[in-house]
Amino acid sequence: MGNFLIKNCELADFETLTTKKMQILVRENRIEKIDAQIDTPAGFEVIDAKGMLAMPSFADCHSHLSQTFMKGPLDDYPITDWLVRLFRIKAVISPEENYYSCLLGALSALRCGTTVINEMADWPLLDSMLEALKDSRIRATVGISTTDIAENDATPVITIDEALKRSQAVCQKVRGIPGRRLRPSVAPAGLPACSREMMQNLKRFADERGLIFHTHLAEGRKETEDVRRKYGLDGEAEALYEFGLLDPHTLLAHSIWLSDHELDLIKETGAHPVHCPSTNLKISDGIPRIAEMLERGIDITLGCDGEASSSNRDMIREARLAAYLQKGRSLDPTVLDAGTMYRMMTAGGMQALGYEKMGEIREGNIADFILVDMDHEIGFFNPDYKLGNFLYAADGRAVDTVFLDGEILLRGGRFTFIDEEEVLSRAEKAVHSLNKKIRKVLEES
Ligand SMILES: [Zn+2]
Image (cartoon, rainbow, N blue to C red; front, side):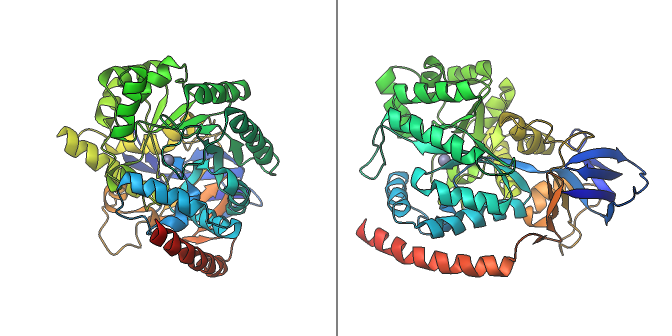
């Protein structure tokens, strides 16, 4: 982290969707002052951000970074086949391959303006993932996916005791990493792959330690029907409500197959659905009722999910898809307007994950924010409507500079702390070695 005075940037206002020319003073890891004119204090580096949009960085609220190298081989499979093959590929990935898969995923996220990831990891791959997260310098909340009911013959099933032991180990490992950028969470895979007892034991574990409870909810129609039959309730959300698992510390990835009553229960408890539109469409899960959630005042967040299903780490692309889907579905263009979308990606996600003083560029807040340069594009961007243009007409590659905890990690679209060519060359070797194994797995499946 350093001391910076950012001059001439256009500060985004998500309420009015306008920008205002401002200067931002960053001292160590905090935004100390925002004003039209600030004198440069001695020892501060001046950054001329003329024409650049300043806005808070993004929170990606549902992620599986190990899948970055699985982008491609699982394209266009039906969900049940996709899941079996995914587990088989995960069983053959080496720690080194996983390290580069996670590192490239985290760097791709940073490149597109994301500084916080809510990660659901896999136990055998945890150490290499944590190493990659540390080296990427991104912030992440990390839990491991656990199941105790086999959905297919490739699902790794464990006991509740083992799930608790592993969650304890995650806490120790994550907290043992220097710096404050990684946090532990608890992340059961979700119904119907988890028993009521496993979910409740893990929720108790999370509550006793003040951790986020991160799970999948109502992603598949068939799975939702199975839960409905098993418990005699509307579906997975009502089951989690009856089990006492819904509250403001619970994040619910996907949240697609929900009744009106279940939407009311989510609103009542303050739990946060995480919308992952690319995955929902690409593997034909269905389209969640985001417009109805917004009507009820539910605090929704956004996630890029794993690239084996979404093929995407760019929150702007994800947000545009989310907005278009709901506008088209509801026949109402005012639904998921740009301001709502931006708040969901920034302050909404940070708050859901429990990050304080983040998600807004304001004095006293932690210096996590981005500068967006849309002038380099050949396509026309209207200088008076940059916020709408960034969301609807550009993508995350327009991000020029990323500040995280007052440290510049990206500048001029290039990483400041790694040799990109070197990392890419090593990653390429790793992905070739994994691809050989993936071909074998797919041939045998
Ligand atoms: Zn997921």
